[in-house]
Image (cartoon, rainbow, N blue to C red; front, side, top):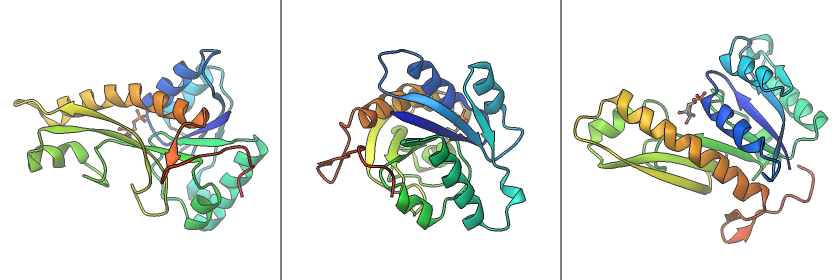
Length: 203
Ligand code: GRF
């Protein structure tokens, strides 16, 4: 399967995906890393790994629709079949998300549906949950919604700060994202009981 990774920042999840995909036995190849921010550190990491990169600077587009249209064109030009959002800090239009339905895979640093949105580790500590974690899910137009592919749980320790908890969740993310991508690329992920079939081209 041909995979693109969308990034905006640091790119540690992207790194974990690139490492997993470097194994010839892994069922997906990363053919493109695309950032909406020209200065994202993730871009340097991708270049160092020898993966083609592109920048689509969202500030140069007049509208979300125009940005998403350009993104769609880049993905199709690279014959991308699956897209991993790895710290991609931009909402995508309903039209784009619908036309890539069950092909957009997002990672979120909480056990969804708890703690959608930002500052998940602070909110987990404030709420007092004893178990926190991360979720990989198929993207839907509403933020942090969509069928769950895989989750990893992390214990909240008595002396945890947002930083210490976040660091443990991030380690779990680096394990979980490649595992979830493998499930999807192998056609083993299900949405409402149905296997997600990637044989057709995106609509
Ligand atoms: C991760 O915590 C991810 O779950 C969230 O944004 C962060 C991105 O980190 N969506 P990185 O760029 O992968 O290092």
